[in-house]
Length: 154
Image (cartoon, rainbow, N blue to C red; front, side, top):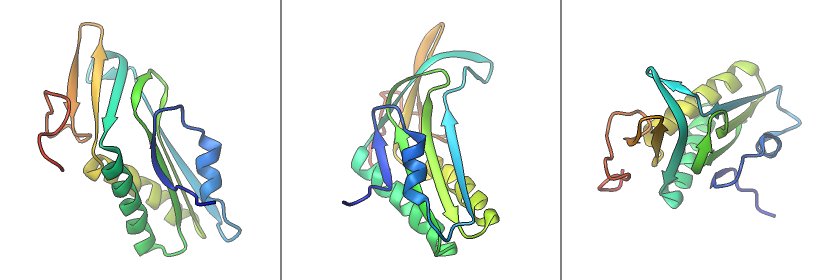
């Protein structure tokens, strides 16, 4: 059976399943980053979020991030799952698991992965507040997508 290490899903993420993908006898460390939906952002109270993605490209970019980590640490195993759809406060939006022989590399790999997700993965979100809603744009919040999606492929 082929393991999908990098995927976009619409159902709640099972953390143990993501960790199991990177568990390795030669790993001295497994780090897990869990990104959740927070209530307060820039002084505004969020009620919920909606994530959308161009799934084939998003999964390809997640795999690219795994390759980038392995370029620096060939023994690394990486698995990333990002959820799309409607999420409530405290719901898990993303789980990154990185195993390496040594802990510093695992910490570095996890941090690198979340920063690169925000940089290159075509996932965008709509925030729902008490007094309205807005498509935020790219995950770095540098490019607005007022219609909900980018006009051209990123």
